[in-house]
Amino acid sequence: MVPAPSALLNTLWLAIPVMVFSFNHSPIISAFAVDQKRQYGAHADERSSQILSRAHLLMVAMVLFFVFSCVLTLSPAQLAEAKAQNLSILSYLANHFNNPTIAFAAPVIAFVAIAKSFLGHYIGASEGLKGLVLKTGRRPSAKRLDRMTAAFMLVVCWIVATLNPSILRMIETLGGPIIASILFLMPMYAIRKVPAMARYRGQASNVFVTAVGLVAITALVYSLIA
Image 1: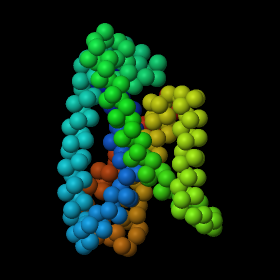
Image 2 (image 1 turned 120 degrees about the vertical axis):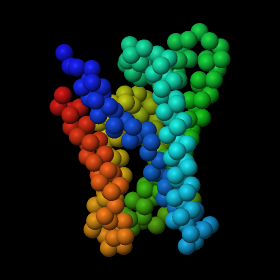
Image 3 (image 1 turned 90 degrees about the vertical axis):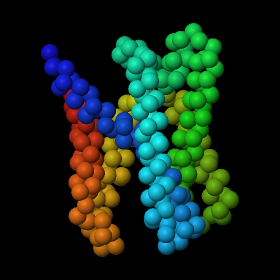
């Protein structure tokens, strides 16, 4: 039998890819950077750091409050049942508790959260798709390119909703590790190799970021072979 401390560490290790995905907001960063550069010019870096630090603190506090609230409300068996049913925790709470307030508030909160997450990811994904189209040499009009992008996103989202795959499994095996590679390892490689980013070299935070990225990827490898 696995000792409790080892089981806890193993669970935390395997949860890192999910945590990376949960806190990820990279798709909106490019649009944010462009807007900050337009507003503040030479002071954009300093102002962006202030905004992001406050946003990160608020995000971590709210997410941890929500997570601990759910964990303390439901038993491990109930959490496993929600995962098996491929339901969000808010949907499970609304179905589980015979409480009119929760039954009304949970879908509203879930809808707002999903809409916010979709819009944030849609902006980044649409920019990437438009860039790929333009790199093929085609030059459609801006309006036509927007329509093509929106149609492609609609079809992809429709297919995923129809197939209804396990979202946690997708995050554990694909989303978390891929995002960890893009957000943790690639920037550290760029800092080491790109001359324009030389001023960021030698910082202790670089070691921490690299370590977390490697841990997230090793969690994927372990989950695949375990």
